[in-house]
Image 1 (cartoon, rainbow, N blue to C red):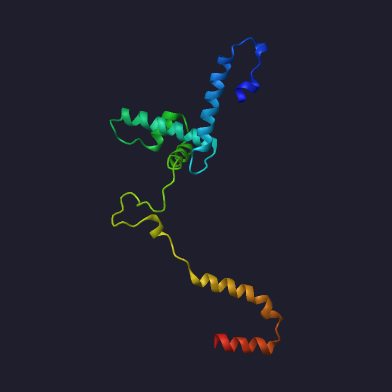
Image 2 (tube, rainbow, N blue to C red):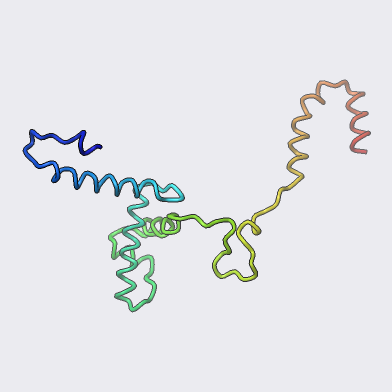
Length: 152
């Protein structure tokens, strides 16, 4: 639709020569911007692609040895900090399910099993803070009675 709307026949080019790159570019843009499970800025996506390509090329040249961060930075003409950002983004394209077993973990424990449980002391703290304004309005004698009744 964008190709049809933006096409200008006065420029003297055939529609196909304008439409093919436009449609291809829109498809690439859609997949780049909408297929990530975790939203990553475009700059970081580009770093990811540069790091991935440099790492793959270096691994082939180094005989299968994993390249270091400094080697990847030199290969891709990036700073080591940008390489670290790109390496972190390699893990962001797809998210792990909470029901998945982490790699290298035996015993069937899922990620959800490793998450913390609810701390009921937090509920008590919230309730105490919610009750403070009302307790401050009570006379001293009634506050003492409540204190003795519920805490002593």
